[in-house]
Figure: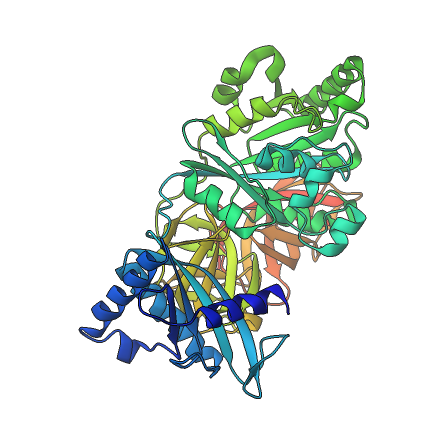
Length: 542
C-alpha cells in the first residue's frame, strides 16, 4: 500500500464519530451548503472537528456518511473544495493540504486521476490563512555552470554547510535528471525569511510543509529564482532574470575558475536591465587567499568595463553595501558554502535591503508557467507585477491566439506551498483558476482585473541598444525578444535602415506568430545566436 493510499485508509478507519476530528462528505455545493443558516451550522461543525483534533480536522470528500467510496467528478470535487474553503474561513481555519485519488469500478485506483471520479482527503487547520502584508524581496541568481549558485542558495535557506560535493544544491533542483547530472535545466525556487530575531530557515526543503512554515513564521521573506548556468539554456536564464520582477540579482563567480564567457553574458543581462546586483565569489575554501584576491580584481575590472562601480564588502562593510547598492554600484564579497564564509554578510544584506519593485495600480501578473492539480484544475504561476489579488476575484486571462481574453475566477492562491487569502505586488504565487483548462494557459499570457480593457498588439516601437552583433542589424532581422515572461520570435525594422554593434536607435518590433499585451516603458532583452541587445518599449500600436 502506498503512503498516499494509507492516508486515505487511516481516515476511513478512524471513521466519523461524535467528538472526533474526521468528517465524511459525499460532496459540498454552493446552492445547498452555503444557503442561509446552513453555512453557519456547517462552519460550527467544522470548528468542532478542528477543536476535537487539537487544531486539525480531516475532511474526506467523495465518500458516503458510513465511509463508503462514492467518488464525484472533477467539477464537483473542485466546487466541494471551494465550499470547504469558505466554511473553514468562516470558522477561523484554513485548508492546509488536499490529496486525491481516482476511482475505478467503485474502488480507489493506485494511479489516481480516473475519469470515473475522485475521492479526497483535506487537512483543515486552525487559524486564518496567511496574511502576506510583510516585506518580501525576490532575488534572481545567475552564474556559470558549476560556479556554486544553487549550492550557495541551498546553504542560505537551510543554514547547512555544503559537503563539498554540492549537496545543498539538491534542495533547489526540480527534475530527477537535474539531480542525477548535477545541472539545473529550468528555473527553480527557494525561500527563507527573518522574524526579528534572525533568519528563519528550512529544516527540510523537500517538505512542502517546511516551506509553508517559513512563510508563516517570517516577518520578511526572501524568495530566490535560481536560473540555469549551462550555456545552452541561456534562453531559460534570461527568462528568469527578465520575467520574474526581481528586486536584486545575485551573480556567482567561482574562485577556482574566475569569470567566464557565461559570467559575462549573465552579468550583461543583469546590468542591462538595471537590476541592482551582488557578486558572490564562491568556493573560497577551495583556493588560496591570493587566488581569491586575484578573482576579486578580475571581477572589479569586469564591472568597471561595464561602467559599474564595484564595492568590496570586506573592505567597506555591509552598511555601505546596503546604502550604496543600485544599478551602478555592485557589492562584491567572498563566500564558501562549505565553511559558511560570507553567508552571515549575505543574511544581513537580504534582511536589510529594501524592496525595489512593488508597484501600485491594478492587479497584473504575467504567467511564467502553468500546471494542473487534480481536483483543483489549472494553476498559473508567476510574480505579481502590480496591485493585489484575492481568492474569489474575477479576472481576465490572455491574450489567446486570436487576441481575445477569457474570464476566469481565482479559486485559491498559494505562495511557496502556503495557501494565502490574498497576495500583493512582488509575490511569487500560484493562482488556481476556474473557467479555463490548463492546456489553454501559456507562458507570456497575463492576468488582469475583470474590468480591464486590454489591447494586445502584434507590433510596437522601441529604443534599442546593440550590445553584441557580428555584422549589422538590417530590416527583417529576426531575434527572440524576452519581455516579462514573453519569449517570442520577432522581426526588427530599424527606422534608420540598420543598426551596428554599439549603436542605439529606434526600431519597429513585430511579433511573428501571435499578439501579446505590452506597455510603454517595459524593458526587454533580444538575442539571436551570439547577438544580444536590450530595449525599451516607447510606443504601442494596437
